[in-house]
Image (tube, rainbow over all chains, first blue to last red; front, side, top):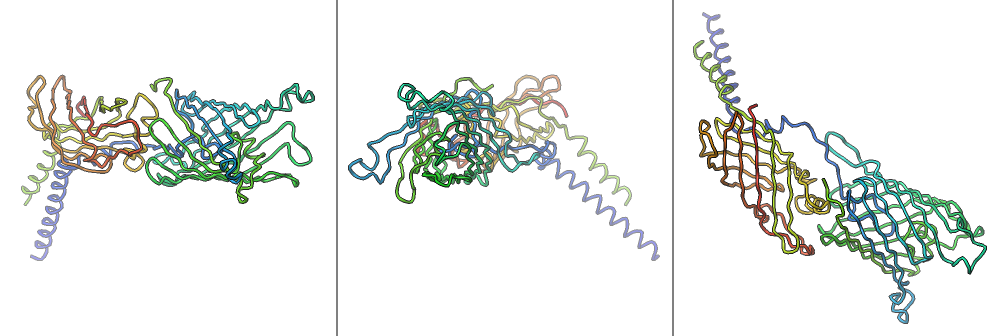
Length: 303
Length: 178
């Protein structure tokens, strides 16, 4: 009797379990097609892009590359120092420009060049995105881009200074840009940079300069962002008349254009001039207003 | 008691047997926006979907980052500014197809009703399209209008290129038996 009751209970329990299983199967077939779909998918890797709006944070380069087949025209402009006073319309009477182009050979490899009116310098560079920040199946914390640049200073004229040979005018820049988009709105970048100038004034300058740049941007709306940048020279010459470069900007993106309005103590718009030849003391008011305007054209259609 | 068990087991099995499920062989999801300055069009062939022909239930999931545009900058803006793809990587639909017969041949009109999620916002929608059974495959097509405001997709005022408030979406799915 006792034994019979026990068995009967077990069967009841078994039935309840089976009912449960049958019901859950029915339920799954009915409204969890989506879960089934998700379960059937392989885990994906999401690459984090658009760490910065443009290829420049303020004066310095960003990790961004142009997409394959995209051509960027970048027009940079710096006015005179704001503390030059009302007579000089707070610097607006002076103007320094760099006209530049950059083209995406692939989504990761770009080639660019430009010409700055300061020191009449031509620059040419190759940019390669070594690693991309990603999450999901493949997790990588940062985007890394390497850039190598050659600058040729064409001022002064050869006939005005016959002692100068071509090599004296050449300088090289190598930099590794490491950036992370922490949130969709906040990105930061570290930029170890090396500048070699073939010929310098030995009493006040180094041939080889090392600096560490730090830059960041914070998006205040979907189309506007605040940015800041600082390049700290690691081995400035003891008699250096130059300063570390500081810049702040407001990025405004309107379709194919990016406008960057900025304030900086650097007049140079290439890395050599910015890192090693910034002659303005930011805190004494040697600040230049300026802007970068970039326009992207799709030359070759994406596949 | 034993009979009861058998009945439940049978119910369980019948659910499996009757599930006449199809998965995607190929798909195209495209949209078109008629802008004042520039027309914007994009295609996506990376969707995944399951369709249960016996019950009409359908689920599909579209990876937003795989919409391909004419210009790479359009794709960047689409993902970064409008769809916020890093936050909302997928657009999904889950619902039911009705109005067709799985025994009939030729293109038949059908309706799809269910939940569409884009940009993290879910709306109940009903759209019409066609269903066609050919050689063990099922072709499902539809064309409908998505209002950006329904999915909280807003256009920044600063944007000079005018983007239409409504976009036309076309789907073409070809399913094969699973």
